[in-house]
Length: 125
Image (tube, rainbow, N blue to C red; front, side):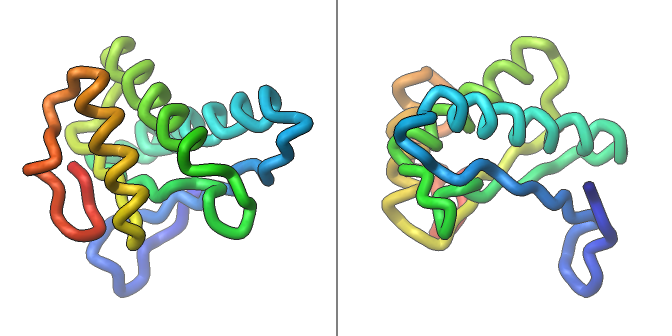
């Protein structure tokens, strides 16, 4: 679902609840995270927005390992891009430097346009 952004410097906030990590249900958890990110993009298009900032969904209190979550999130972005349904700007955000390092490494491996030089504290565009 999405709501107004109140006093934040954005138009809308898309609220998403990702899966709680359970290693015994790892495949199910991975699919649920992919579905969560995909739904965020669907809502973004529905609300006719052009930019999205995505935090590392489920990696906090839901214990999803960032080493597993980061590739899933980037795969979701790449899948959207291949369908031509990516917004004008996607920003991967977090307040933890190690999360940004995972994103940077993966983006470099995938041959994405972004490099570590494009990162600034808390954001990877």
